[in-house]
Each structure stands twice: as C-alpha cells, then as structure tokens.
Image (tube, rainbow, N blue to C red):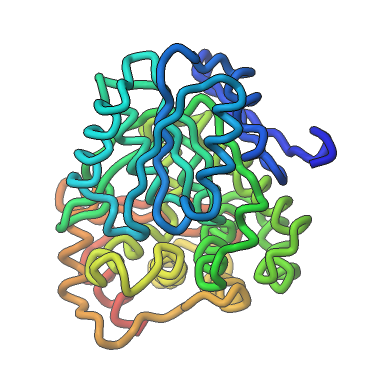
Length: 368
C-alpha cells in the first residue's frame, strides 16, 4: 500500500459513539496501527473471530499486524456459512474468550462476512455485558451488515431473532479480500449494494446498472466506489435512527419476503443476497399492486438485479404457505398486520403497515 490517500473514509454519526469506516486496499496489514489510533487497550487480550474460509486466507495477516503493535491476540474459527449463526457457536466463542483471559477491557474483532460479523458482534455485546468490538468485513455483502451495530444469531424458526444493538469502534474494510470471493458471493453482495441505491439514490442505481459488468468482475475502482456509496446510505440512515424506531426500517427493503425465503430454504439453498433480490422484486410488485408506486418500479428493479446476475423469481417448489408462516415470525410482523418497505419510485421508499396477508400471498405466488 503506497499511502493513506487510497483509503476512503466515512463517519457514522452517533454522538459520542460515532465511528469511522475505512475502505481501501491493504488495510489488514495496518490493523495494529489502526487499533492503536483508536485506543484499543493493549493490557487486555484481543479475540479475532473468523470462519474456516476467511481464516485460511487472512487470519495470519490480521493477527501478525496486531501482534507487531504489541497486542496479545487469540483467535476462534467457526464453520463457514449461515449455519454458524446459532447459540451453540456463541457458546464456543465465549469458551475461547474465557480461556484466552478476555476481560471487560478486551476487544472482539469480526474478520469475515456478515455471518461472522453478526455472531462475533453478538458475542461482544453479551460477553461480560458488553466489550469493545471491531468489524473487518471480507465480503461485499458485509458492507451492509458491518455498519450500524445490529448483531444477532438465528433460531430455527426465525432469522436474527436473538440479538442486540452494539456499535463497533471502527470498521476496517480491506478491499483486497474481495478478490478471492467466489462469483456467487460477489453477486449476492451486489444485491445489498443495489438495495442502497433503490432506497435512496436514483443516480447511484443508474450507475450500478451501467457498471454492472465491472462490479461483477470485481474491478477495484468501481467496487470501491460502489461500496463507499452503499456504506454512505447505510451510515446516513443509522445516524438518523440507530435503533430502528422508524426510519431505519427502510433498510429492510426486500427483507420481509427475503428472510422468509431463507428460513424456508433452511439457510443454505439461497444466499442472503439472492433471497433479498427476490424479496425486492416482490416489494416492487406489491407497490404496483397496491397503487403505492408513483412510477413503474418492478421492471427497473428486476432489470438491474438481472444485470447483476441475481434471481428475480422464486423456485416453483417453494411452498407459499410455509413462506407466509415464516413471515409471521419476522420481527417486522406486528399486531397481526404485515409491514413492508415499498418503493414509491426508484431511489425512494416508505414503510407501509397494515397490508392484508391475502395480497402478500398473491404476490408470493406471482413470483414463482
């Protein structure tokens, strides 16, 4: 890395809990100096949590940098994939933390994708009632989940139902790690990039469609720009509404149907991004069906997602009844009514409550 001019920096504004997001190449090799800059205590051990896939590639680079700056570092590796986000994995992390001597001044670092970030973040939120936490995302998808402090594990009946809000000290996003992502994971991550444009930035949405081939090819400049713009939307929303009292729920575009699809698929058949892509198509169809959209939204939404190599329809073998039941377990299902984030236009969404479940069922069927 030739210098700090290559690092894009953003700030999540949360008063005395504000923190920066660093996006750039080679940042894992400077983990130690960044930790020092943010005053992470050296007298207490640091625990780096990663998964089998990421750990084999990047764990040594991160821990070596921290050790070179004088930190005592332990590590814990979980299995790769959504199935790691369960209470048993949390218990294993706590066992490692206790064995390594972590105390109230320790820091837990999440080195990996969204699963590792959610799991390690929830460990940090709950260990000794809360210790410092750092996000080091290694996937495109995690540009969304690593910002904003929402951490959780899954229950067999519902995704992210056991969780907390726990903001990181900083987010260190080394874009060199994205070069090793499998193509399916690249596409999955780009679903959340597209989501941020569809929520709040019409121009960025158009840019994503124009530059879809560059993004799919993981072209560094295009990807770095897209991640910065996506993180900027997320950071703005979180700074307005940290704990999802109102506005922050707009970040759930596509997630009501998407989370239900993941639950029905058993957190494996569909990636998170694939499920959210189908969910965003469903939300666009629902907006048009209810007369909520002021302009056509389904066609441009599905066109963008298709250009990014994402599914826009539902596999026919999925049971509509099971999908509807999974939606009833969702955190956004309140008082017997369905709540959806619906597009008014490309780049503008709103939260709509009281949607009849029969209409939602009709939309789910139409997606097959």
